[in-house]
Image 1: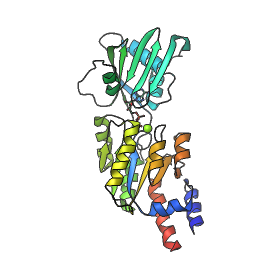
Image 2: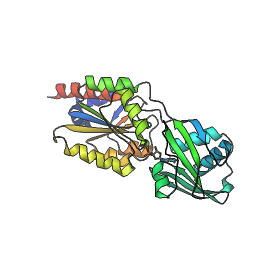
Image 3: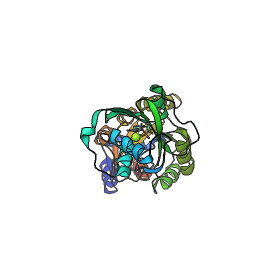
Image 4: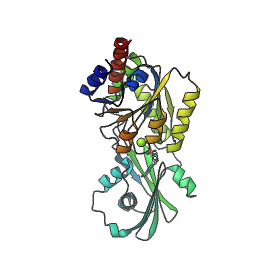
Length: 283
Ligand code: ADP
Ligand code: MG
């Protein structure tokens, strides 16, 4: 009947890598989600560009150039908004700092593009007013040049996912994100997520998982759901790692125990229902 469970799941676009995972899934009470690309579409659009020192076009161009070697959803959005061909000869150095942003040399100028943590690390004074959205701050030769506000949308299926999970016996839903507090709180409130942690570095996500492990009995199981480039260590640490395969990275799919082949997080509730049914038949 375990094989029946795995087969039934696969017909619904849920790949379960072993029958033991169905058993653990049936005992899962805490689901921890990554935000970007898991609960949201992972496609950002530019909303606003602000600069007091150079033109908006120039700010976007420098950011798009600095980000041009990155495949991060933020980088892709800036390149899409810039919408012109990138001349690679203008870029002579690039470094992407996971959870922070990028530092690149464009036209012999040092371009720093990323979040406030990156600005603070580089001792760059940045705009500290209230901004709603994900923000890319930009500095030219260590002098602040302005910021670009971008926004992602929650997936249409995410609200159903949280409701279905509660109905299938999940006691706590958690969201972890590297994005800022404003964006994280807005998304978690909209979806009815119980606990939210924001402004996390990739390593902080594993630490948060450890904290959640300390707070629960070992009989209660915890699943982590992620899509992304930086999720592999968290996927591996959870009792069950679930990768969203729709847009997910190969590394995440490799590290996961269960892969959702579509981009619908509500399939996790479907998988839990299948696991509970399978376990009832098995014992
Ligand atoms: P998430 O937890 O949402 O998947 P990441 O860990 O990939 O996010 O990134 C966390 C934060 O680090 C982003 O919200 C952004 O502020 C910043 N960041 C990461 N990569 C980049 C990049 N290439 N360009 C600009 N900012 C970035
Ligand atoms: Mg991510």
